[in-house]
Image (cartoon, rainbow over all chains, first blue to last red; front, top):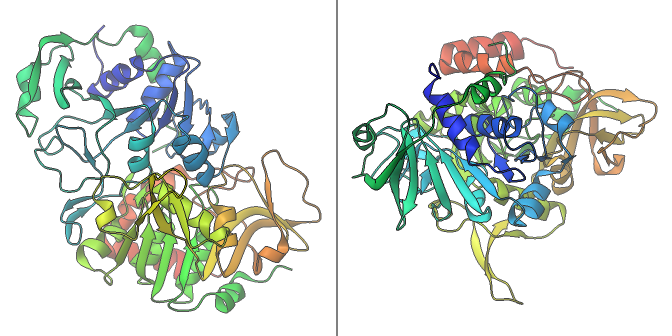
Length: 234
Length: 268
């Protein structure tokens, strides 16, 4: 199978890590694509939880926002935001939380708050939102982030969430997992040279001695992925 | 009884107030926000978990002195350019930030609704945010566990949109409920805009009702959440959220849009 994009490869690799029955806290963008792909393929029983309060959402199209009406219509139940963060997230009922960020360091700590200093930022980013407590309260944190020196940095400008429970970082070049606490390249996507991942990392990236290659997307995965279309005409 | 939105805003919201317009993606009170802009409110402290387009507009029009928030972006699209311009360049005026996490904001609203001085949660651990915001540590008197305490939100005015009210002013809302109930109960004064007034509130699965005596003013504002949505009435205008990125990126195109669509428009 050939002819797929780097984003599709990322979504497929993240989806493969979701088991049937896994309860996933999902944000918008690639994590939402990955979780919906898992639900449409090998993990029909995975539970999609969006922080807007929809538990067990089963959207046909990809939502643009975490509060799209279809999420509420297809959910098993809809709860208020204080209940979501209290009973469900802090209550320890979420297995996997997906996070993205503007910056990541070698320990999986993330920055989604500012570039530059907090009081006089060069770029004011949207902020942490649910991330700080997602990182503390879920079993496993999955990070999805495109590989670049701008994002994979030696020193974060700001620590928004901690990397203690980051189990995997899926990038457009490969897969990083913590080895002795430090994120290490354990797999590359088909056709990717590990040196490309080293060159796109702002710290001296360790590469596993048994570096693997990920499987390219199957036709079934790509078909399922492409049948999910964002609900916007733009 | 419902009163005109212009009258409700005029009576309930004063310059310098702490005002929370809530709605977690759903039921965002855009019409009420536009009325605040038309009436030229200044020096507001704006509170909101997810400041999106309506707060970008209020900030870009110079209504706000301070923003209390947990995530300030255009969902699924990118940055809020007016918020960024205010924080990065002080345009049209500097904006003070008090930043929290979603969990912290939710706990602060729930504490406010419960008339408690602070909310408590397992959060704000380790990251840099706690050095830049109002959070403290409390020790559980039973287990000794250290927990985060956030000061309760007690806005001067809470503003939300809802699907409908009956003629006595009882308000019914359903779908994604966000912190709608909490902000109304936490605020000293409250204003609710609704899609319509009906004779009787028929039960809807998952709906909640805010009794009339918890609300100071109910105003009819059809499509008053647009480009957000009102479940059962109209869908989220996702295309407008995408279009806002270009409209708001440039100060002149932003002001032209506001002049044409807000300042010269008439209140509901």
